[in-house]
Amino acid sequence: MIITKKALPRRTFLRGVGATLTLPFLDAMVPAASSVARAVTAPARRVGFIYVPNGVIQDQWVPSKTGRNFDLSPILSPLESLRERVLVLSNLAHRQADSFGDGNGDHPRATAVWLSGVHAWERRGRQGMTDIKLGVTADQIAARAFGKETPLPSLELALEKPTAIACDTGDCFYSNTISWRNETTPLDMEAHPRVVFERLFGEGGTAADRLAILRQTGSILDSVTAEVARLGNTLGVGDRNKLDEYLDAVRDVEQRIQRSESRGAESLIELPDRPVDIPETFEEHAKLMFDLLTLAFQADVTRVFTLMMAREASPRAYPQVGVPDQHHTVSHHRNDPEYIAKKAKIDTYHIQMLAYFLENLRKTPDGDANLLDNSMIVYGGGIGNGNLHEHTNLPCLVAGGGGGRLNAGRHRHYEDDTPYANLLLSVLDKAGVPADQLGDSTGLLNTAPLSL
Image (cartoon, rainbow, N blue to C red; front, side, top):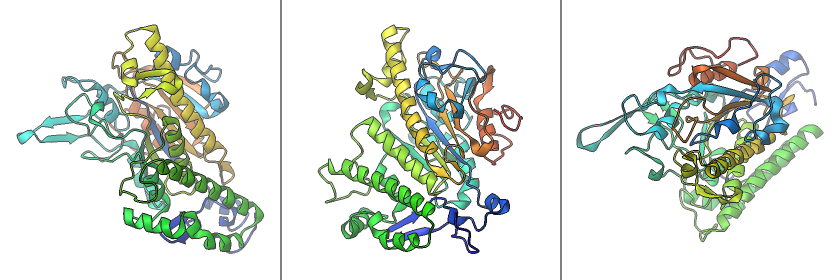
């Protein structure tokens, strides 16, 4: 590290034609080697929430042992290399997703309750108008605190486009998002990598703007080349290597997006306001979106995200892992061994995508640690047993280090009907965003300073 009296500002941007690139955390941003200086510039904590629908195969998800000597279950086995950074939590419940006399709608209620702990309220008014009401979600509580220091308060992403097929009520507001700014404002989940990329790095607000930028530069990175060169001359060898690795990652993501778009008839000839070109396969799409999230954390563009791997009642098939049937269909397995095996394959495949993301976070430096060490990633869903639409024993794990506050590498089993909202309060608390109440929460899961 080069020690100077004048440090590079933490919020340093590279600006080009229609592009703004935020820098990752560099040693040159630390003004001196003192512990005080390092404390001031310490990497921030980050939180993310990843939703999976339709429940899981319980006996292949829940580890057979509790404590530190637990064995990862068959579905969770792709996380073996990350087990010391994974906390598995079982027997949590979201009772606010139960019917309460509302009739059908377990799938939308499961999505709605997951980060809110609030029973989804829907009433038909005059002239067929629908009133909806929920509550602020955990991610947006974090975004209110962290968003004061980042360009984007939060990112809301999805790997499926909104569709009415995924609803078993007349209203899709609850099925198409897991993020609510307040009790009447759901936030859209973005599925298009190009839109996400430009939200992070580009200033082109319309199709015409973006097309003009691409015609002038061919790449967002190309437009900041001169600034990169000037900055590089002021950095030490270590920081130059960090910057090169970061820019290489941005370039790789940009090129993958361009390749996906070039498969369509529009290519770069005509860009719509909302591009329809996304990667052809689920795996390519998932990895691209996870890489964008890694870049967003690395550049400190945002410290909060939500992502839906799929929507409840998803009709997606997974022939790439031997499941040509629709996800929702196999979740109602009726104890048929063949369908149970297919559902377990889907559950395991989703965990493989999670492992890819977590490994990327772990290999990305962040100050003296890495992004995974300074993050908490909550993964799970609002249905436990998909065959019965039960909202108990929900699939749940928390990955990361929480900036030293999360004691992972364990399986913890809780008493029946322990509110899942207690976990959300606990995650917020460890992220430095304490909240008195969230939905039907009754308190923190554990008051010990380093455990959940």
